[in-house]
Every structure is written in C-alpha cells, then in structure tokens.
Amino acid sequence: MTLPPQPSTGIGHVGILVADLRGEVERYGELLGVRFRPPAPLVFDVVETDSGTEYDVAVGISYAPDGPPYFELLQATGDTVWTPAQGHGLHHIGGHVPDIAAEERRLEALGMRVEARIRTHDGLHIISFLQPTTGESVRVELLSDVLYPAWRNWMTGGPPPGHDQYPDA
Image (tube, rainbow, N blue to C red; front, side, top):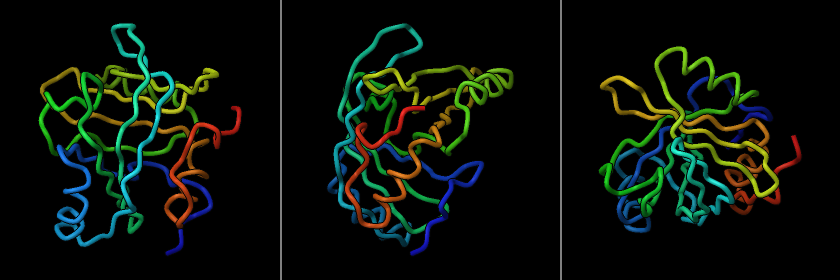
C-alpha cells in the first residue's frame, strides 16, 4: 500500500459508529471488502462542545488503510459526540484541511454548525465536528493537516496516533 506524502483535499474517509468495535471489525471488513487495523483507543485531551462544556475521552477506533475512500469504525461512547443515543451507522464524512477555522467558517455559511472541537492539552485545534442545521443528519469531521503524518504512519503499520506526535502549529 502506498499513501500520498500529503493529504488529499476533500472527503477522505467515512466514519461509522458501532456498538461493539471488536465485534464489528471483521463484519465491516467483509461487508466493505477491506481490512481494518487492530482497534486502538484514541485519547482526546480536550473536547469542547457547542454548549461550552469540556471533557476528555478515550474513543475506540479502527481504520481500514485500503482506500480511498477510507473507512473508520468508532466505538459508541457515553454522552459525547460519539454517543450511542444517536444510533449506530453512518456517523460522519471527514477529511484533512490546512486551516480548520477557515473551513468551519465556510461550512457555517453553508448551514452547518460546530458541534465539537478537539484540542490537544496545549491548545492546538486538531479536529472539528459540524452538523447540518437543516434536516440532514450527517456530520462533517475536519482534521488538521498536522494530524496527517501520524495517521499515515499508523496506516502503514506504526502505532496509533497520540497527541505527543503532533507538531506545534
């Protein structure tokens, strides 16, 4: 597998929320005709919601490096942006962007609202989730380009990303 040295623009992956991550890796692999990396916890230091509350959380995740498109399985987790109360299945479409704040503004002008922002413990804004303000229900996940090298390393056999792998922006 060869991954590009830089992220492509636009939608890069589809996130699917599941009730049992370990149990669904094999099933979704067969359904989608891909292989998933072993499930791993990703710890997010600061998740800031649109209501102003903040929390830290570990989310179980597995990614299929066979793409694009790439597929991500996420363990439904508590009262978070990954809450099981929203139901399982399609959770978001996502991609890397060079400027999260600018892309948030662009999407807000198109009728989306920021649902959550994820920052590192030192304040680096690395991920945003946006939801439509109309009847559609698919989130958009924006990932900072600074995440791409760690993600690329994981997809090619390295360890899952951790906040210690993100350079200061």
